[in-house]
Amino acid sequence: MDSSRASLEKPGIPTEHTFVFRTAAASVSELIGSMEVKFIHDQTSASPKYRGFFHGVREIVREQGLKGTYQGLTATVLKQGSNQAIRFFVMTSLRNWYRGDNPNKPMNPLITGVFGAIAGAASVFGNTPLDGLEAHKYRNTLDCGLQILRNEGLKAFYKGTVPRLGRVCLDVAIVFIIYDEVVKLLNKVWRTD
Image 1 (cartoon, rainbow, N blue to C red):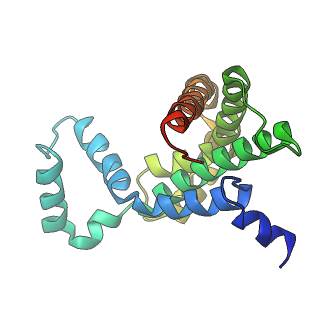
Image 2: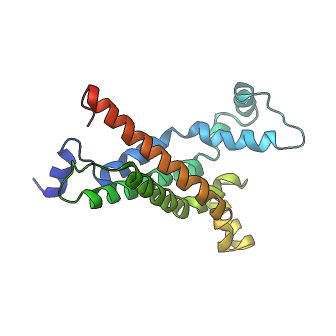
Image 3: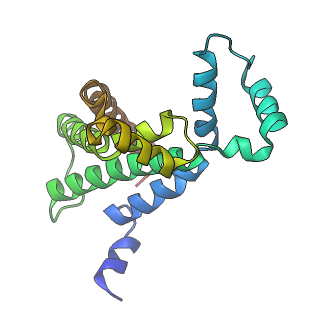
């Protein structure tokens, strides 16, 4: 058995690759997220036509067919999949680097927070261009990307990066700290890792 496969089979020792696979697979559940963009555009218009989620879904299916519920799904899956894959890859890489040869080396919440903030920053830089694709209305994701590039240039893909960095870095740091502390608490009751 090769060493990369053996490391995947060690319980409690996640690798970067397992997190990337898990988060990419989980992003497929983002259908509702792609519809959220439609509802946001509707609610910010001068005369909103949807009275709520179920009414909106019913109207979209009535007007555009079932296909209408999937518009924007590609951009949403790309954005969410890359977002989580980048965060967990960076976080797991930093944890593995910090722990070195001792996978049981405890992680101080401050270290976890710093690593979480770095993972959040990496995800902002890695997927901000995809976030822009999700928010625009074009024929499809590729058309959207090409139109933005032609009409606004490469810089347009990174609009809003700086304010997003502040929010996402803090958010991801807090989430990873809370997760680690809850796991520690649960380990006192029963083994979770």
